[in-house]
Image (cartoon, rainbow, N blue to C red; front, top):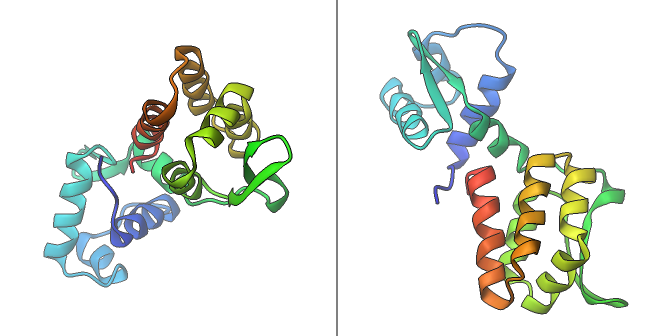
Length: 165
């Protein structure tokens, strides 16, 4: 598991918005880093697969793009609300994949089991987050019939792999 730093998320975001090549020194200045610090950040992200080297520069990989998506909120009407059972809300909700991951860590396993086996997680990911691949991975977990902490770990592993947490 590798958690992107705030600087690294900022770098990825800038790279997606850039319309062309940018000089390393100029890029570092825009990120409020030295050229050396910028190179260190880029090398770390390259090493863990968020970036790849292309000719004399870098480009964002699918893993990097997914990391950026993890902080994009769904429409407020589509937030995921956690329940322990029908008519038993926990009070927890998620508007982003990052928040979803945080709630998966904290939720009671009864809530995880309730939502996974009803297909709630995969439906939310498919419809609100618009990530069919991730939804399919959650559906695969459902077929394993895992329970308790093993289920939590499996869900966390899928989120970590997909979104780079």
